[in-house]
Length: 568
Ligand SMILES: [Fe+2]
Image 1 (cartoon, rainbow, N blue to C red):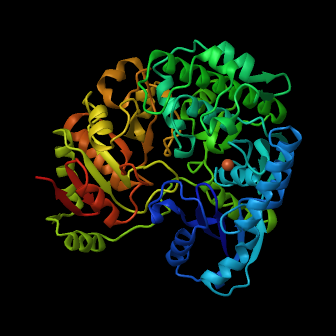
Image 2: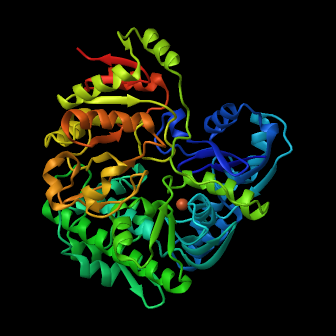
Image 3: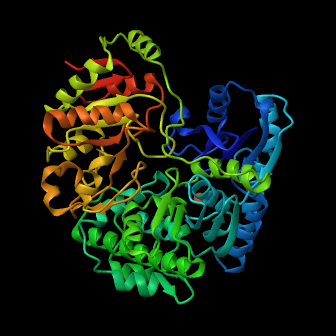
């Protein structure tokens, strides 16, 4: 039985499952080429159907990641709390009704628009709670028979943090924290205070900057902005830092007095900005640990699953994994709202249809893939000179060029689901060269110098590199690199001595593992620098996207499956 899950606002995405196993999953942005595409995922849905070789008539159930009627409560709460006036409230509702296209209220029309666009079908349509979709996206594919689950983000319909428990094929909600108390909105507001853009997904930048600062403003944040209380709870003081005002770069008097003026976009970064980032990051981590400890106390479980946009904070994840009482962890790699499309499909399969669990998510390669011949045709079409080589020749040759300082666009297999490139749509380079980070950030990716870059390492060496066993195929945890290792791979060790590794398994990605192995044979270095294959755009999806990026940019080589292109 086929079940389709959909995320239709924010990071739109579609996931198709068959008998509980993921068949295909992708974000709409990869097709539309618009970052964080928001709107019905027509192309991602079509890809899922095509990949399975079915039509919409073969889909028995469709799950949506949102209950649009709960929005009324959210707007009502804002009204009650005095955050919006009666006039503004009425205007919002009118606007919502008018924009039935891509608004929350427009979701009621989804079943009809699916039939109009994809053809007649007798599917049953389900509106599902946002945070339960996040929770399902992590727990049901974690491989754990039972686990505590923490999901946290900006907000769902009105819940921002959900404590739950999964046992076999059921989910039990334990506690909700609702608006305006939101860890995601706190971090987004700080992102804008620092002159970045919460809508551009710039929260990563704050996390990267934090490593350069000291938590000088910690007390202010912990006392006046984001405070914890005894009952495994937290309180966000929106009178001091309001996400809705921060969206428009507006900040109140108190925060200005405590932190100094907000940074204007493009203004130089100074120690004060690094210290603000470090303080906000530490307050987030401490609050998260407080909540996780509470969840542990409440459940007594050994395993912890996490999802929701806040679970992208890989530094926070690293602290949770090394300092919380849980023993085993699973973080959904598509932790943001795109992953809710997977969760929606899984809720239908497991909790509504009561089907048992068999599937475990061990990799994220569920997007489109392209045969080598198809890639060669695209190169021919583009008029690029290339060689087609078997892996026995291609991999050692690329490894050799990497060891001499070349930067490659590496394109193989099916595209990753979730925002991390995991060796199928990646830029790769030599991590031993200290200047490689700046070279990649500034010359290739055209972005800020301080953004950390991460290593893809053979999973066999992770314990040695970190001084503790570590398994993370999804690059979602930051850990301290063992002291004697830091100098060996300077391009992938952040200023504070940490790294965010992908552990590459010979079983789940044999070709990428083999490439790293060839590099190790030449250099003794069992890892490559890996960053996503995109320049100011969504990650490349089709061979044509990769070729376009190669042509407009400044890197040395391109591999599309077995085809090698070298820039003169
Ligand atoms: Fe979310």
